[in-house]
Amino acid sequence: MSKVAIVRVPHYLILTLSVALWTLSSGCYSNTAEKNLVSMFVVPEMAYDVKRITLGGENNQQLFFRIRRPYPSKDILNSYDHDLKLAGWTKCVGGKESWDYHRDASLNDRPFVHQIAHYWINRADEKLGIVIITYYSKQLGGKHQPDNDVQNVAVLVQRGVNLEKEISVLSLNCK
Picture 1 (cartoon, rainbow, N blue to C red):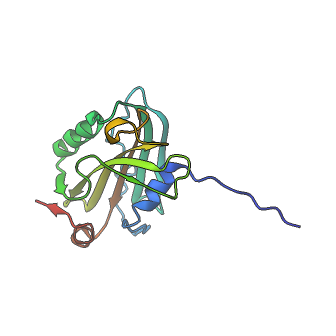
Picture 2 (cartoon, rainbow, N blue to C red):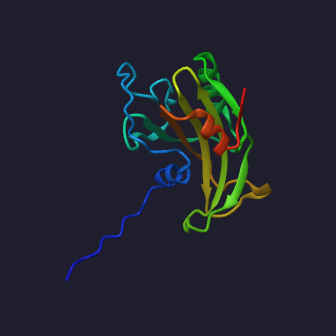
Picture 3 (tube, rainbow, N blue to C red):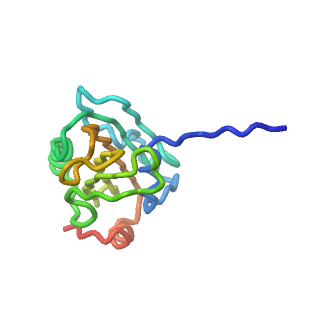
């Protein structure tokens, strides 16, 4: 008789899978000068559970960490926005630019999700980036706020994509 192992998938992987609009192609991109697509993002000193993940090849990478920040703090998001702008990226309008919340029935232990996301593109380097900050809650606090102060921060960068197609699929405006 064979045994079956039950594996619990961490929230950051669920988040990654939920951003499945990103094509996970390994590609044939030959630029070896930049192996770490998420290296420009400084991880705050108080962050924990820091993970750098390659998704389907070096052209798809994610930086994930948790940090305690009171809701609705956007200091990390604002800092990354500043860094991306200085690096020549273009901010896109669309998606979840302000805090939003919903219930996700698939997350039994913390079904209430508060989330904000900013999308960025770098046309010269054919890169698409997204910075997502999420709180997961057992129940809603007062005024529909999370019941904790743990931000789950995910930065996803994909290189070598068809930017116009992705902009269209994601309904973004990138000027």
